[in-house]
Image (cartoon, rainbow, N blue to C red; front, side, top):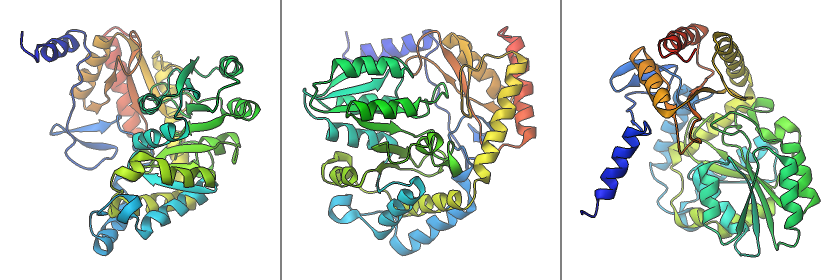
Length: 392
């Protein structure tokens, strides 16, 4: 038996179960329509919520930064990689989020991996995690010796049951997604904040899919629920609604200063490049100046979701522009996705292990750059393929 037979067997198994992920190639800039595997298709798949990924103001900011700072930062932030534009971005984010301080990192995943092990590092500590939290939160939890307690999805009462059991823990960390990326539902943040205060737990919210989407001018979930100053750490990504790349942490000043000293991705991985940082600054500036992109996003989402429901599709319990078209079995979802692509729509199927078995879906990601004609085109194709595959 060859040492890599297990790889071939597992790959064959994924294909047989309809779980093999076909990774397509983008041949141009992100927009309402783009080139995928050489074909022009409607983009219903990316996280480019506000259309900033190809925004001329962001591109100009990146070009100017290259001229001034060059391409690379040259070092990790803690040695010789912190440029004045990194600090400018952090100050900009703090003002936007209405918090004491912010810390920018290389990605959202790195931001979670930076924070969780730094805050809870002993078997005497306990992490309380929503059962549907993102993989990056789960990975962050795996990097620490702290015990993990998983509470039922969106269940504040279930969280309190576990908090009561763990009253004597040395440190307690509650961590939850703000918007859950597969189902588009929202964490009940106000009762979770109250529980964190009652049981003296640190509260961390991963708002990767809430930034630029929820709250005034897209300030995120804390703004949406009016709990500014009561969430200890908000994690955000700059690769979704902000249209660039990178992650950040925002919250209490002393926590951010602690993470500058202790967060391993900050200490041991090079800083984000100057053009990316400059583009991020431009993206935040646009949202500070106008909420029109956010309003357009929600207008498009309301229209599309309403029409999909009228067609008879199950779109789950989404409360955000994320629209899961629930299809059940992975093979059905992948066949549906393949047919959509043939008809000029790029919308990938999502199956196990990203979502539980039996809950495969097409996850439609609505953007502010979609015109109503684009959405009507998609609705027509979804309806026709739904009947063809007998899911309607």
